[in-house]
Image (tube, one colour):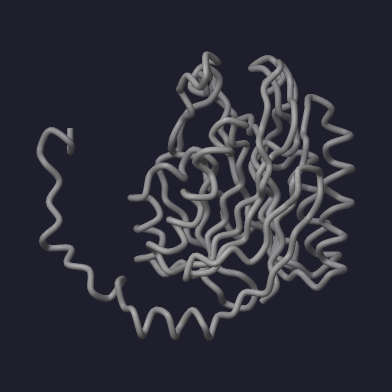
Length: 276
């Protein structure tokens, strides 16, 4: 299966973001990609007010485009994540949607871990405008390949990825907007670690460049195989990368180095204070 990661420089200009996503998704499909992953908040990326202004429900224009495009191109499309306006709630959700080649929504995942941090003096408080999801989601491509869904900051929580793998995920999508500093120092290591630990392919589509209000993302979108080999990595520009996912090689890796099968769940006990 050929997979693609689309790297964007999204801003508060939703029309421009959508046009670029459309162009690069079509480029990926023309190159033979059957699975295409867009980055986090590909429809709008900016301040909290920008996100609120550009938020959409799941039956809005962004997911309508994703459904029409996936159907037209005959691809599985992970529509990165969008700022989702949820009826009856004050806060938004950071929501990833998997659409199949029939144009139907196959799965919806709402980001579990909120990005409430300080990086090199810049404070991020995702929880001020968004609320976390609480459901771990494994979907399935049209070819029957199990697809784990996650978003950006989730990458730092290996428990999530282990559960995705135990539930059968063979490919894991990570739409992201990793900061420039954390892309430079952490991103390649974390992406490869999640692939190696879970013997899964990882398709990690990152944002690149500056977004309002003066935040920067680091790019370097990656596709990594279950051995940790980087199959493709993006340059520092808006672009698409593709790679062939050798599922038979994955089976050999999981058979010859059966770390997933050798797990001992009965011995893994969280300390009580951690449970709380």
